[in-house]
Image 1: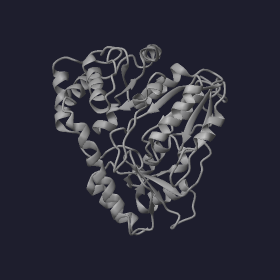
Image 2: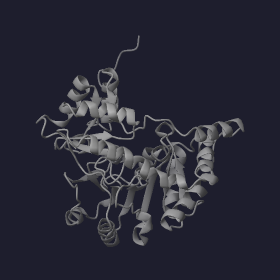
Image 3: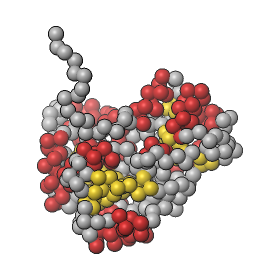
Length: 387
């Protein structure tokens, strides 16, 4: 009989990393049959035309490996979009790689760029995959704490953190979870920093088409300075309401893309073939991109108006499909405690914003996802108005 190990035969590479807060809150929501507004996925149906297109390409036999960089038809469609929307020329052959979702793209960029002993600047609250990916490479996370209500970046402080070990700066624009969108000044400040130092930028732009009111998405690709030293990560899951398909892409200059693909080919090699072709044909309709802001703006505005008379204070949302709720008028509890109690007692699950900080800063904020059917949002409001 094999004896069990009393001690692991290897050291954990992530000893202080627990299960994702998204998995934790979704599991709690399922256990207590709560409305799940924690994890960022839509609960409405994908366009049947897109489903039909996937079936079409499956029936036509496109069920084997796609080319490692992705089907050229999809890469050409992405290139066309950047030209149409931003007036940016992106080479589909040498500068675009199709990935197994945005998170795989992020991980692969970090794997390709970051070495042991490097320092990586991130802005917190930050998407939770950045920090562990950096630590797996043996690098050091240098967090810049942004605080409510405006989460404004102190660029002078950022400059003070830069040194000879700084290899990478990661930005998320629009930002999850704050909903903040980079201004022209933010882009210029970033330009000043990378111009003065040999630093790479990783720009997570998965919510680029979900920007509201007077705000506008400014991609790092629109900056000549940043364009030459940046990776941009995007997501079809967010764009097409198909988070379960795990498809995205990474744009980078040709010399960066070569290094990215060296890792990508041994990470996933290639991703779902018929879905790539279906997306390429579906996105022939350029009007789809223009419909997204209005679609989500209506959901955001419904939630904002409906919670006006509640005890929650709603923070401004410039982009993404998330909103932050301040519950300081209701409770002094820590965010995780309040989120768990809300799920168990009131049957409504949200994410504590403290989970997006290295040191768990408590500001009495919860993140709510509004990428949901009106029926779901109405049911959530009926709970929140009486808390």
